Length: 127
Image (cartoon, helix red, strand yellow):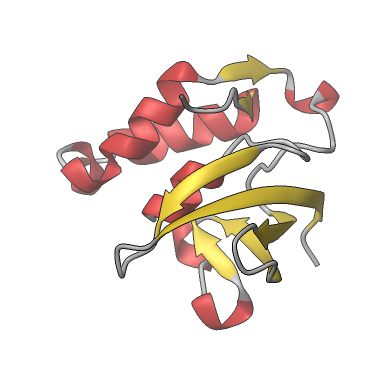
C-alpha cells in the first residue's frame, strides 16, 4: 500500500503542463509520476503544510536498514543535479518522494535492485 500524499495546486498545475508538452506526452517512463498526481490530495498552495515534500523543498531521510541519513531536494527537471542532491521530479525516485510527509515511510527499489525503506525525517525550503 502506498502512503497518502499531498501536492500543492501550483505544483500540480506546473507538472500537468510539463507532462502535456509534446516531448513528454508519450513518455511511458513518466507514468509513475502521472499515477502519483492522480491519487494525490491537492491543497491550496498558500496553505500547504510545511512538512510535505514539494518541489524545491529539501527533505532529510533515513534508510532504515543501514540507519544512513541523507538530504535530497526535489527539483524541476532543468534544475536537477545529482552531485548537489537535487533529484528530478521526472526520475522514479523524485516522483516517489513527491507529497510525502515527515514521519511517513516508503519502500523503494534501488537501481541495483535492492529493496530499502526510507523514512522522512524533516522537510525544509531548499537552500
